[in-house]
Amino acid sequence: MKPTLTRKMRTWYGLTLTLRFYGTHWAAVGPLPPHPQLVNMLLRIGLSKEDSVHLQILHELGHLQSFPIMVLFGALFFKLSTPLWSTLLALFLLWEVLSEAYVILREGRNYFRIYGIGRGIDRY
Ligand SMILES: [Zn+2]
View 1 (cartoon, protein in one colour):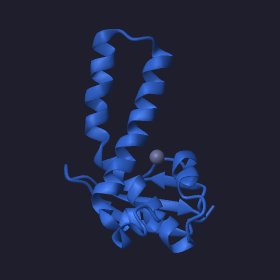
View 2 (cartoon, protein in one colour):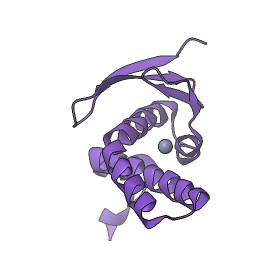
View 3 (cartoon, helix red, strand yellow):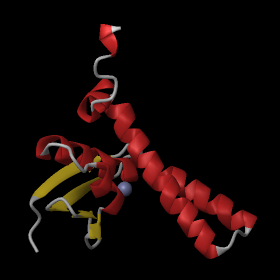
View 4 (cartoon, protein in one colour):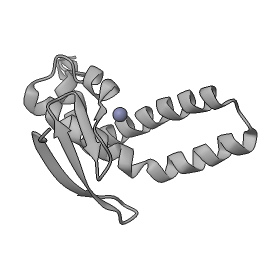
């Protein structure tokens, strides 16, 4: 399967990897096999293709940027001996939130413009 889009990206901790996108549903990081972009895809429903692809790329980069934080949380959960399934669920949810927070921080007002949040506030 050939990617429809590739982006070479560098993280704040010095790792350079290639992100590969297969349409709007699958993505792959570096040498890893493609994974479904379930959360990323759900968050982009109703957006234009251009905005959707732009935010999808940043979201996947957000996963890479926040990876060291996830390692720390993983170690914390391990130290607290939390059950495996609740740990994995918590780490998954946290990683998705951190990745989208990265997108919001990177995009700033443009993120809210894309989603139409705050439109019309200036009139009042
Ligand atoms: Zn994600």
